[in-house]
Length: 167
Image (cartoon, rainbow, N blue to C red):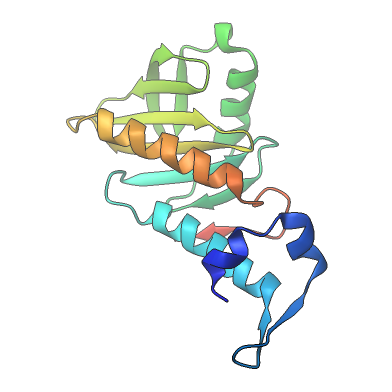
């Protein structure tokens, strides 16, 4: 049984089974470990993607779940406060750079700084942030973030309070 097969099993069943015996080859698999490895692979693939110079995954509660460059102290709190009161927010600051908000949609914010641009996409469980050089095309990055949000929402990262990945 592969990890892909396990991902199709409803989470309530997977959580209740810590060890699973696949009778064909006689091997016993630690299902919890396999699912955690799959979560880590999905996030590490995002952190190492070539479309963005810097990326972050921030839980809706403000917990930093993953990043490849750390946000500075106070930036996440400021960002979340601004997202809660969008009329009061015309710019955001991430990794020490100020970004002026250009477009605000239901689930996305597009902002430009002096040399970089950023997209903040809100999934059902987290804010997914991608920062990239300003001169690069926006469309493939938006598509990638939308797909990543869907993939992220299918996982249970936010439920695991000890889960954090840094690259």
